[in-house]
Image (cartoon, rainbow, N blue to C red):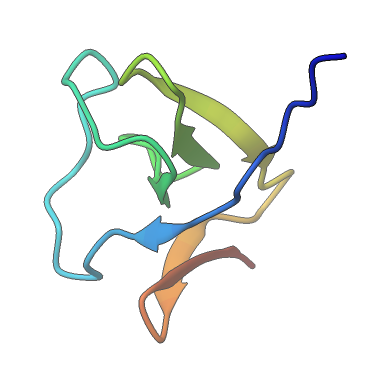
Amino acid sequence: MIVYTTFLSATYASPVASVLDERQACVPGTYSCSGDIVDIVVCDHGGRWITAALCGPNSFCHFINGIPFCS
């Protein structure tokens, strides 16, 4: 029997970070705002930014205590 265990760890991008380029490599588990600030993105296991949440109409991504939020 094979048992797989997943450990979740999240690191957060600095609120003073520059606009993201989704093509640049990242540290898996890192969350940030997308380059156009309309989504929250997370770095996948391959070091690529992927969309984690859409902020929606009239909303944008910003940081509160170093954590990206939509409002």
